[in-house]
Length: 86
Image (cartoon, rainbow, N blue to C red; front, top):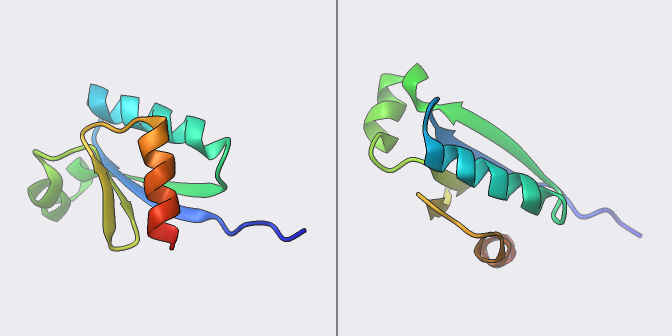
């Protein structure tokens, strides 16, 4: 049986953001069902990231695709991961 490849996700976030914490918790629960890697980017570490994502965080991306902003449920995230993987 072949292992499914990991899904690489990037979460744009910042410290003290409760919505970011909530989205991270959803991602962690989904990770128990779907092999994935998560790169959490602190937007406060870069003026460019802060300008791009400042009012939109949390933003979850898979490659070039934004798959969630602000809030996401486990069911919606699973569906989006499946759809975006093709």
